[in-house]
Image (cartoon, rainbow over all chains, first blue to last red; front, side, top):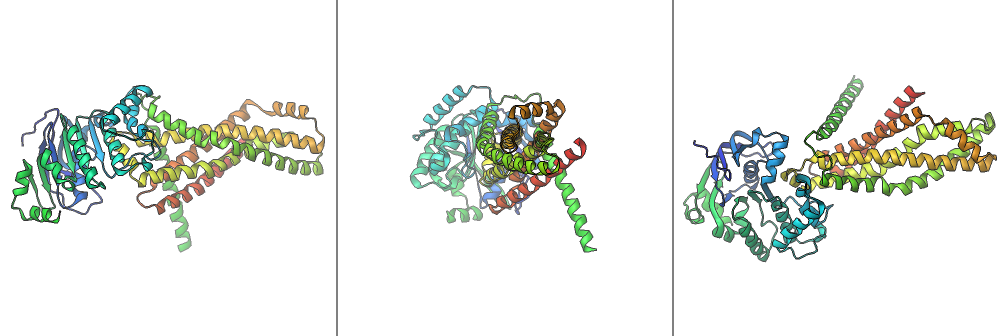
Length: 249
Length: 260
């Protein structure tokens, strides 16, 4: 397989995620995630999809095969290289929460304070600016426990974006949101997918978002991996497994 | 046979635990590499928070405890010494007892009860809620951000609190002795200062640094040993407290043997 090493893409070649707790079969994944494109992984097992997403995000090293992210092979990175690499890759998780002992603003500031030499004041200004951009209309120094699920997700998005990553991973971003809030979140995410490679799981929780923005859908189950180049092709498929998955939604 | 087998298994378990703990500490310290900016703002802010929680906030209770323990120890010593030799060696005994034993040990126990348990609960709950994992996704080193600031602040707090405890305890102990036994406070202080040597001060500092290191490391190790169940938090807290006390007494025993 010809591996493209474009600076803003992710390539995988027969990659199988490393998992020790999930008792599922993982078929090898060969795919390419292009710049400014939104790719969604769908399938019947969320834990399986998350394992693939974390492998694509460089959080876990593949058990087999190769994953190339932004021209770098994750398995070859040393500790310092991995830290620098993580600044280029944002990861928003709808289930992994913010740090509860720090207030909202500090949570957003944290990656900048840790990875850069910006002063505290400059970092705070940057964090406030990004929070305003994301329409955080609450007091920035509120602790996460006192915020709603949507407000916490807004902060998590701000935290994932503050280092201006080239690639953004969304792990069930519509998790635990009401219909109105899903719509608002979809608008926000739609805005931030521009000029970035975006890959997500949990997109079927709000199909309208996929309908509007998705460029590639990768269906992953225990037996097969099928790639679709548009939402329409995915919806029109006659594959019985996918039809079954769609009928459950 | 089964009895000896059990003892053997427990010894192996203890040995492996000590190896795990040492590896954990070395792994945490290995974060400090040449490329690492020592003044990392995120880490520094956690360090200050921890210093306030474990050190500054404990000053009042440690001082309060020192006043009463000082008076109790002094009154007992006065009573014993008066019945044996008169009050000749009272100050010497008080200084030795407080500086080499009571100060570091009682402060260590306060740190275990107050801060060690707090660290285990804090880290354990943070891990269960998935907050640690989400920081790892951002490239934040867990040892750097969670472990090292807690251990360093624990060492500094233990040294400073033990100094405060010893000073307050000595002062009130001598004051109380002077009141009961009609000693000259000025003479007692002069005698006490003449007893404090560079060597005794060095041993005092070293002992307290080790105590802080042990309590901080054990607390972080057990806090991060929590996996996914809230019941593990109390379980790990219990283990951390008991093991910290055992290690503290072992180290203290070592110091007694080699400094007598």
